[in-house]
Image (cartoon, rainbow, N blue to C red):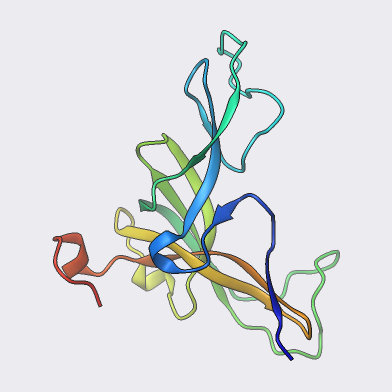
Amino acid sequence: MTRTRRPVVTGWFTGDDEPRFRLLGTRCTACASVFFPREDDFCRNPGCPGDGELAETPLSPRGRVWSCTDGRYRPPAPYVSDPDTPWEPYTLVAVELAAEAMVVLGQAAPGVTVADLPIGSEVEAVPGVLNEDDTHVWTTWHWRPVDAADENGEAAR
């Protein structure tokens, strides 16, 4: 049976493959503030002169590690998880996007640990899977370290 790929949150990213994958935010046309998660109702910048529209904008595909940590225990209720499934640690990354002047949180790609993410190292947003069931593959984004060769403009991986 074929499972349908569905984003965990519609409108937060586009593209299901790496070359086209981008996080999507919104930019205020009055003050140029960028928001992620996206804001579709009003500009959250208290200094905005107002009367601007919020336009969808793709965010930078790469940023620098601002901070990271690992989750090594199953969170308590009300977090929902199957207690019969073994808990698998994960890495959470805060990534600074310089062009947007913001920090975006996300999970690191599978197999990437805190040791792989020194502060200031370059990472890229890539498609990921949050969960799978009998009918759906729930997609999200992950942060993955940029290959040193790729940082120098050479062929990656």
